[in-house]
Every structure is written in structure tokens, then in C-alpha cells.
Image 1: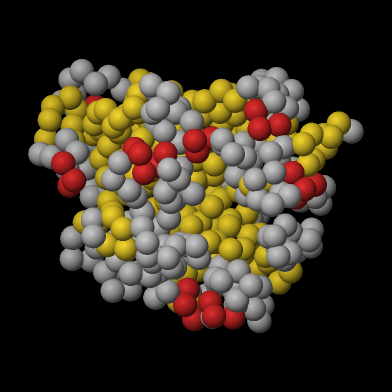
Image 2: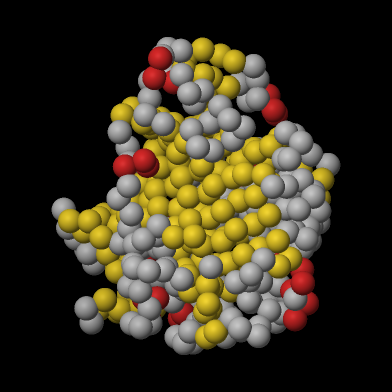
Amino acid sequence: MRQVHGWTGGAVLVLAAFLAAGCEPRKAARGGTPALRSADAAWAQGLGMARQAFGTTPDGEAVELFTLDSGLGLRVSLINYGATLTAVEVPDRAGKPANVCLYVDTLEQYLEGAPSGAVIGRYANRIGGATFSIDGTVYRVTPNAGPNHIHGGRRGFDKVVWKADAVSGADWVGVRLSHTSPDGDEGYPGTVRATVTYAVTASNELRMEYTATTDKPTVVNLTNHAYWNLAGAGQGDVLGHQLTVNADRYLPADAALIPSGKMKSVAGTPLDFRRPQTIGARIGELPETRGYDHCYVLNRKSPGELSLAARVVEPVGGRAMEVWTTYPGVQLYTANHLSGTLKVGGRAYEKHGALCLETQYFPDSPNKPQFPSPVLRPGVIYRHVTVHKFSVE
């Protein structure tokens, strides 16, 4: 098979299976999750992981919780239901750790559709009219946003249990999750075999590598829908977060958020984050979307290049996050639908209580030939990478 669409750096390729044997327990992580650190000399850098049961779906499928530890302050937890991030813990300027990813406490809440850092597929974002064509054949996918299709349909990749394998390399530890979507799933053609590998590195990075293959021409657009609040989950809104987006253009869209097909300059608009500014500075100028829910055209030198997409800083605690990606676009969403009714640990998730930076192909690309193509064909490997780099200021 030949390989297209993405970065091929070895730091996130699967190198070897990590064996649970030979791991020694260390003190319990926050929230009672036991953490493990390898006793093997290869793990002298402090990388470690834990694996434990998290629950069972109504269909009897076992769901597991994994915790990955950089040994330098970054600790990531995820479950194989929806390939969902449940925690990303990083310290602030004073060294105080907090989970900066919105989460809920139980599997039942995830099953009910609580906001989560799940993997979205087959196609993240929207397909206008729930219809597209490849090579002259028209395909109709599930309309689940009025007449349109969003986030893979009623039972997208965020609502299935993925097969999970612990993996590792010389300077990273991770989990590789895999899922097979059958031909005709939610109306999509072809049997797609998808993987996502979450890796925590010795450089305090969270890396996500997406791959997919197909036996028929189809469309694929995988992303992660994590909700970020760098002050900590449930710690108010993110309107004071300082945001930079590496994009000179965005995609104008209609009321259903289906792009027109044009690309427009951000200059002079509330979408201009080319220089750092607070998210709340001009959010009031967007009444139609009740906040940000816009796709940016990232500045890139060449397709498939790992490039900076965005940078976020929470000025009070000093936590900073950079997002790098091989995708052409990023959807900025400011949790406009949250209302404070969902509470976790006694803290309400309020409106604008988080932001999402969903790296992806552009919405409705299957119907916009002028956009980068999300079409995947037999014999080709879909591969994209997104990296989250954490630091303090």
C-alpha cells in the first residue's frame, strides 16, 4: 500500500507492544486511578501506564480505562468507548495539577452523550444534504442534523467500543485503538479499518495519530472532540483564555454551518486570532452561532506538513497548549450549547465553559471539489497526526 495525506514521523508510529508484566504500582493518581510505572530499564525516563476496568455497555462489551504518564507532569486518561479522552492533567505555574479536559464520572454518562473528548468518524463535522458522490455514484448518509449529516451519523465512531492495545516506543507510551466500520455503515461505502494511537511522550506532548484503510472508495475525516479549559474542568468559562489561530482565512457558512465553498479573510472580523487575543473580546459579535463555531483554513507550506494550528494560554494559572496538525483545517467551537445543567464534582459546565480545536478536513468537503479531498481509495493509507504540547508561562 502507498501512503498519503499525513505525517510519517516515527515518534508516533507503533513500535512495540507494551507488556503489563514488569510494571510496578506507584501511588494512586488523583481520582483514585492507580498508576503504574515500568520497572524495566527502558522506562528510566519515568514514562508509565495503567489499565483497569471502567464498566460494561448494555450490549455486554467491556470498557477499559487507560492512564498514561509522562513522568514530567502530564497524565492522560482515556477509555476505549468512543476512543474517548477522560482526563488530561497538567500543572499550572505553581505546580498545581488539574484536569483541563471536560469529563464525566461514569460510563453511563458517556453512553448518554455527555460532552467528551471522543474520536469522531467516519466523517467529522457536516455533510450538506447528507449526500455526496464518488466517481458518479451517489451515496446517502444518515441525516442527523436536520437534512444534513454530522459527526458520522447516529452511531458514529464516538459511540462504539474500540479494540485497545497498549503500545510503546523509546520515548513514548500509548494506546492503539482500532475499529472496523462495515460497508454501508450509516450509509458510507466500503469497509473501513480505522486506528487512533494516543501517545504521551517524554517531552510532555499528547500525540494522536489517525490511520484508516478501505476496500471501496469512500470519505474519511477523523478528529478528536476534546473540550478544553486550561483553568481546569468546571472552573468557569474560557472567555479570558488568550487564543492564537494560525490562519489568514476561514470558511463562510450558512445558518446550518454548511460552507459556501469560498474562503474569506479573517481580517476585520471577530474571527481574527492571528495575534493573541482573549476569546471573549469579540464573541458577542457572533449572535447567529451564539459564539465561535467556525472552520479555519490553516496556514501551511505544503499539504501533510505538521504545522502549528493554534495556541491557547490561561493567564491566571499560566497553562499553555499548542496544537500542531497535518490536517488542513481546525474547527473552533466555544461550547455554546452548555448551560450549567451538567455538573461534575459539584462544578457546573457553563456556557463557553470550554473550547474545542477540532483538527480536520473542511466540512462538506465531499461536495466541494475546490477543498482538499477527503476521499480514501483502496490501496491507500489515510494517516494524519495532531500533537498537543503543554507548557506554562
